[in-house]
Length: 249
Ligand code: 13P
Image 1 (tube, rainbow, N blue to C red):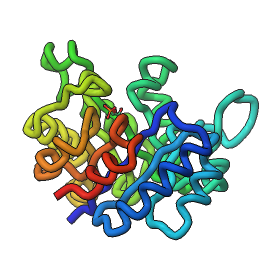
Image 2 (tube, rainbow, N blue to C red; image 1 turned 135 degrees about the horizontal axis):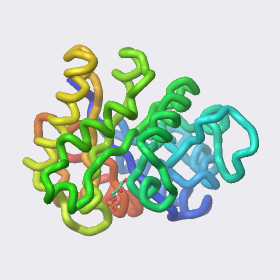
Image 3 (tube, helix red, strand yellow; image 1 turned 180 degrees about the horizontal axis):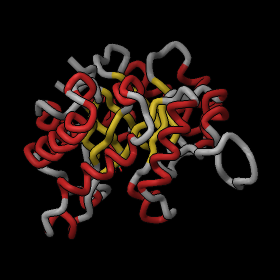
């Protein structure tokens, strides 16, 4: 059995003061959570978040990591820096980074390798655009994105990564994939991992759904056999909403 994992992606929201407030409000609400709980906060919030997270099982996450150890990469952060700041999880290849910041499958793979080598757990985002789904390319695309992202990792490393299936058309739009669509595509991702690395590996990998997941639709999605958790944007910015998602039934 795979332990469910619910992660909040705060995106570019909340400075250190608001981060501490949100975490302090969240802590008592999720203290009995059965799922692994992660908050992926903006980099300026790591210190405040780390302090606020004391005494809770909620894990600290980042939203990106660079693939080099150090050097002339203005604005970037290395895995070692994140680790030292208390980060344990890192989102890689979010569709917003692919769309606005030129992230490619190849740079996603480099970042995944750097994260794993640096002792971080990557949350690797894959997903199709609306026109790609309509053209029938979803399965091939998500399988390809997933396998490229995992290139160079050992089987033991792959067992520990998190994949987030986020259909781009469902992000921030209020449109959610149906329970069946999400389950089916996540099944495709798991099969792709199984074909290349075997069932012992693919059975271990936790695969989240992301895209307008909220307190209203979480139970239906989490009841699906292939869905192991959620990557939550908007609904992670309010303690009550995020707690309801975390404490799904
Ligand atoms: P929303 O939950 O706001 O649709 O965002 C999903 C997402 O992009 C999480 O990474």
